[in-house]
Length: 219
Ligand SMILES: [Zn+2]
Image (cartoon, rainbow, N blue to C red):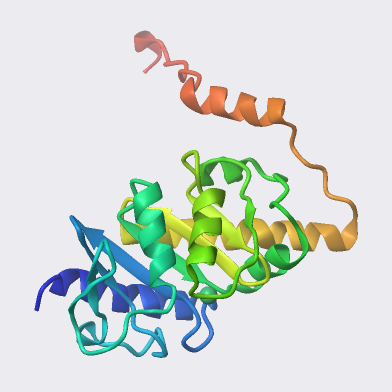
């Protein structure tokens, strides 16, 4: 079986997403790219109950290369993001807080500096029907400029990574950031970090202060 290891990794990621409460039933999809091939989860299958053989392989143009099942209906979005970014893996979910923010906002207000780990302020891609080239184009636009995540209006969220592990962690981080924002909103008006405050975080991360070392005679 071609991409056997990657297809097994998709199954493992599906189980982890379900265990983390981020996917319900067959909602959500995951893919991993190797060269010009993409292994993707199938449509209509519970993400925590897949076998590697259930996951089809397509090429970057979308032709089916291997597998019996139809690729996820959001495969065009995955392919558009592989074209837009240097990602090697993509996770799409309908996780609760991400969907709440995607249903009410035009972007996820940066109330926590860890949004920078997703490339900056996460945008909400304009609504389009699931599975359509229009949705793929709108998500691609929201992800331009090195973003690692986007929210999909009235739908969910999507994250990319250099591997499945990173795409999964980005999905968890996106959901956490949305959860913080939504919960903060219930007790007051959240303070939003300014561009300058975010720029200082980047500066600090790039130039961490050196730890003062204890003098040798004191050791
Ligand atoms: Zn979806």
